[in-house]
Length: 225
Image (cartoon, rainbow, N blue to C red; front, side):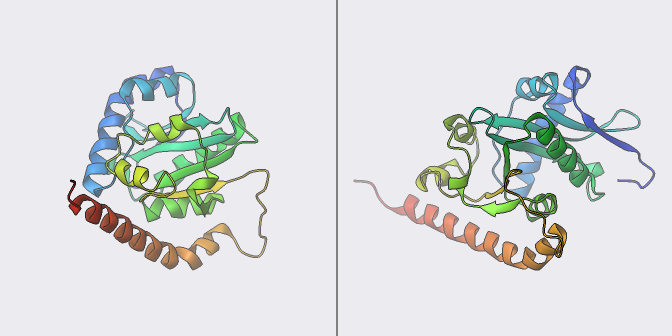
């Protein structure tokens, strides 16, 4: 992204629905390029989030789409997921992802002040952003048990792993923040906490991927009689 490019991050609305198809295309192509799974969303689904003002969009000064993220609610509003974070290739590596995550986090807190906010990710960069916002890695058991949420993973290439682990584990790392229980450590900032733990997180992600993919390979090689 050029330094003189102005990008505005705002709550999406009905005037932005024409970007939905492009956003979905980039979500899919980005996941394929990374070799990771993704829960697919249709342009109509993304457009509906915009109409409900449950999404954040980033646009350049000339109207070019730059990034996006949306809100999903589960368990009758007890849980909120910030999902579908995507930044257009030409706007990456300039801090835009963090700005979008901050804005969608603020929107989540405004709409659902008592809800636990969570996300699933395979990317260390997203984990870093989440950590700076106050998220902590958690087990899957601490997430919503709403079947509708987990059904959304059916289109992910790793769904078989999720099922084999009885929805208790997968390649994604779960991160959550509970606004009612969160405590601010005045001595150590979230950024410093993540810096200290980043190598541990990185090793954990590599190990998790190795173990789960290995177990999948072994299972698929067992003959059926």
